[in-house]
Image (tube, rainbow, N blue to C red; front, side, top):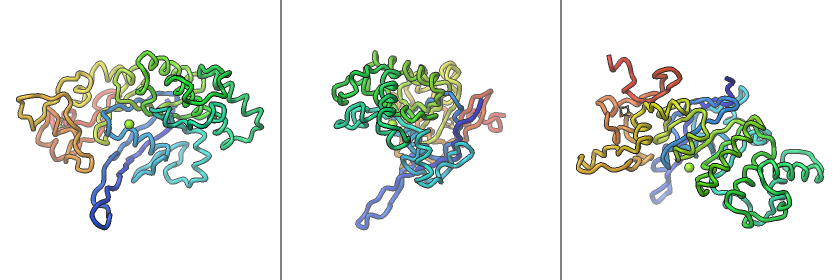
Length: 326
Ligand code: SF4
Ligand code: MG
């Protein structure tokens, strides 16, 4: 396997300003020290509860927001340090599809205009050549090209997401971040869009980072899966291996929907996946320790690193630390 993108120690903090002077009083640690690789041609799924930092990760990779620290290596280059002009050339190759196509498509532009725009920015083509590409792409994503003069509101939700996907593909990208691309759609439409994304991946040799909170959707589409919790990757594995034998207590809880014990409720009543701690004031040690049924003393003090616990199974949990379990 060939690596397309290498993420090294990525961090993203958002300042919280307050007080009379509006000075920074704290920060939200949205992404803390993430390292992983994305292989060429694969779909890497990122899953976790809302607020775990998966969208921030996707946006930081594409530099829609700027990192606080760390590197994103693409073609032997740390793209987080590229200047805008150099980054613009790369934007052709790296695209994003958002959850809500209604919000991300300009309501006053026709589909034709929406799909033509990336070509105007990135390619030198005649109007006729651009339109050929637009109509071709409409057909590729399953939209009737006779509808090119229609506006986004004249399409269904699923069709609108097809328009967003077409727009992302116009510049022939290599890497696409898909941020909850089907979660706003009816379940019956979801699988159509997932199948379309799989077909397009084969046809255009695409690599995906697929972000979702829905475990069924993630399982359907992903080759490998990263489970995020409070800004950290807690587990990384091949898709089926993860579902067959989740290693991290958080993944186990997510997959089984077994209630995670809540120490504050003192066992009288167990809640189904309690609240994620405040990311501006994350717990010491393991970020999951306040909700973990297997918490040990060390878990409160030391943050476990993501290490290979067994063949191609990476997990960040002291339970898999051989030195401790001798
Ligand atoms: Fe639970 Fe400790 Fe593993 Fe964290 S490191 S998931 S607290 S056992
Ligand atoms: Mg999100």
